Length: 90
Image 1: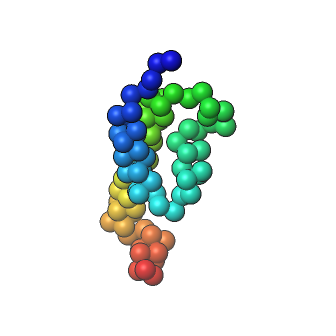
Image 2 (image 1 turned 90 degrees about the horizontal axis):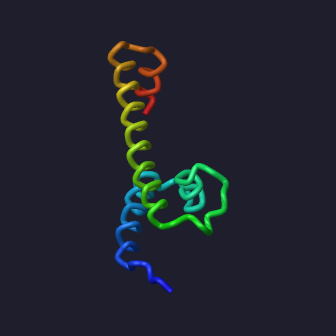
């Protein structure tokens, strides 16, 4: 039986940890389901595929959040009353 390289474990776990720390309000199950994006059986998914999915989510989610922040900043600069009121209430 071919053994899998144990060096993959800390590498993949570090990526998962970094992603989860950015979104600490997600429960582990929610994080895993969001990473996968499907409801398929996880039993046969290779670790290399999980690693790719985790990396892709980290990039996509971070980009999406940055775009949202930029959009809010632009609305603030334009004086959007809803955004300004929300910001002032914090």
